[in-house]
Image 1 (cartoon, rainbow, N blue to C red):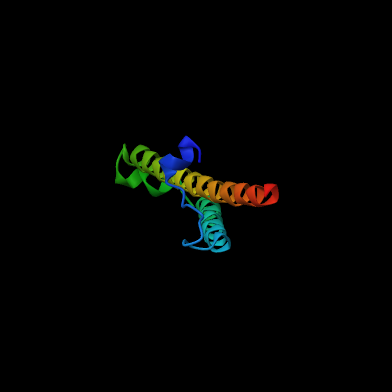
Image 2: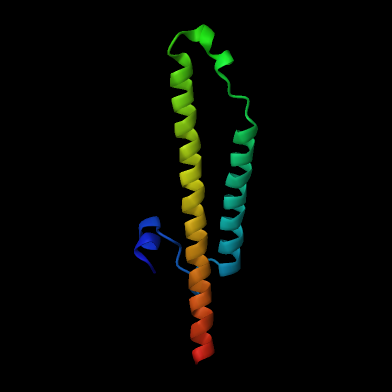
Length: 101
């Protein structure tokens, strides 16, 4: 397991744990949900005309907050994807070990 996978605390694929197919499927679904969320955010009507009546700084505050939220969504998606890759790597490594035997 790589240092990055340990930092993310990737689930360990083992005999007494959740099935590897289940883990992979569920993490894939989470990543796909984040992909859908990112698409929905791209379609979001977000324009300064909806903020100017709130004051001179309202648009900047709103824009900065929206930028931070979108960055958070992107970081979360990337972490779940990295976990999914870590699960795949464990599955692949276990298959290779079986082939060697």
